Amino acid sequence: MRFVSAVWLVVSSCTFAVAGDAWPQLQGSPRRTGDAADFAVGESLGLVGAVPLSDGVYAAPVVAGGRVFVIDGAGVVWAFDAKTLAPVWKFATRGGPANCNNVAAPAAVGKFLHVGTTAGYYYVLDQATGQVVREIDCREPIFAAPAVGDDRVYFATLGARAYAVTPQGEVIWTWDFVREVVKFDGDRWSGADWLKQRGERVTWRDHFVCSR
Image (cartoon, rainbow, N blue to C red; front, side, top):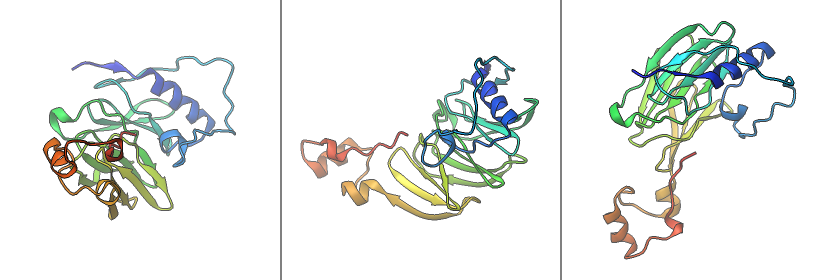
């Protein structure tokens, strides 16, 4: 197994841990602003430490409850102590060869950690133990990081199906952009179905991929 040092993860996590701040989702908030106006960055940054993971890291880490959470490319979710960098737990998501190059940052809400994978599975984990609270088989890859707001967590699949779930992972509603907006009822991943319904030409109006 190849190990890659997640240097950026360690630098970021220690910085936030020292400041005593949480960074519970991608860019800090559901608006994806990255705004940290009250946080002062020193004139120089240095490497505090490095931790080995099972693959490269392509998704941003999040910080909550004194821990740093990150998913690596192979779909393994890791929890580290934000001060000591000691591993607390790890959880290997399922999906086989399709579970690779994961790019969706986790999201922390309450006692739970929400994680989507390229294998199409969405997990709600217990932050303290890494145990699975809920698993949702979306049947499509998830490239977009979950967004947390108003006691709901929102995420979308690559095929532009949107979900609203509770912090515990109960599905409240789903919405399908392809059916509701594009007005396409066939198999969205089938070229033959698109040609059957659209004739010989598919235009930019039929674009639906939700990759971020």
